[in-house]
Length: 348
Ligand SMILES: [Zn+2]
Image (cartoon, rainbow, N blue to C red; front, side, top):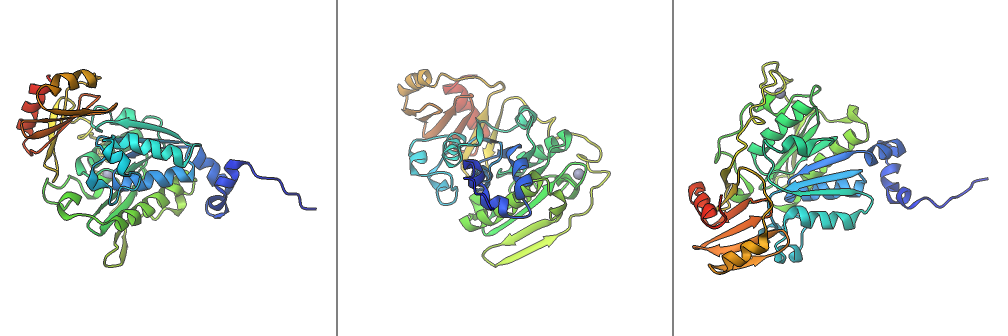
C-alpha cells in the first residue's frame, strides 16, 4: 500500500529542484547548509542573489557600496521605484526583498566598499563568492582573497549585450591572474556606463554563474564546465573556451604574492568610472550621526536624510554620505576636488 504524507513546507518549496536528478535530496541538503557571499548587488548581483535565495542556501551574505539610482531600475531586478525614491542603499533594499522572497534564508547585508582592509573578514566562513562587481580592481582583490583563503569564486561580467563567466577553485583551476595577470588599464575596457547594457544579457550571464554555483554547493564539482564561457544575446552566440592551465609563475596562485590584498587601506578617493562621481573613503570606518550632520549641513544647502544615508547639495555638487563615513560626490571626476569637498563639509 502506498502511503502519502503531506510534505513539510520546506520539502515542498524545493520539490522541483530536488526532482532535478543532478541535485536531488542530497544536493538540496548540501545547498541548505552553505554560505554564499554576493559581492555587489547591482545588475548581476541582483539576479544571482535572487536565484541563490530561491534555491534555499543556508546563509546569503550581500555587500554593496552604492544606493539605488533611477538608472538602475532598467535591469537591477531586486529594486523598484520605492527603493529609488527612498534613497535606499542597495544592500538594504536587496536584503528586504530577499527576505520576502525566502524567509528560510538568513540574509546578512553590509553597506560597505569592499577593499583590502575588509575583504578577508567579509569572506570569513563563506563557502562560495559570487562576483557581482562592476570593476577589475575589486575582482583582482577578490581573486587574491579567494586564492589565499581557499574559497571558490565565480567571475561574471557583462556590458552591452556581451558577457562572460568562469569559475575559480583555488588549487584546482587556474585563477584570474593565470590568464589575465594584470588588470586592464582604466579606460581601456568598455563599461556599462560608457557602452550601456541590456537586461537580458545580465540574466543570461547570471544563469551560467548560478548554475555553476549550484554544482559547487550541491557537491557536484565534477559537472563544472571548466571553461570560460562567453555569450552575446544580441548576436545569439555562445562560446566556450578552455583557459590555459594554472601557471606556476602566476603571482597569486603560483607565487602567492598578495599584491591586491596588500593594497592601500588608508583613506582614498576613487573616480567611479563613467558616473561623473568620486567615492571618498576615510582612513578609518566610523559611525556617522547623520541627523546631526543633516542639521549642520541643512544651513548651507538642501539636505535629505534617511536611516542609512544623507544627501546634500553643496557648491553645485551632490554629496551622498553613508553611515560608515564614506561619501560619493556627484558632479565631478576629480578625486582632489571630491576630497576637498569632503573635508570641508564632513571633516577628517
Ligand atoms: Zn593563478
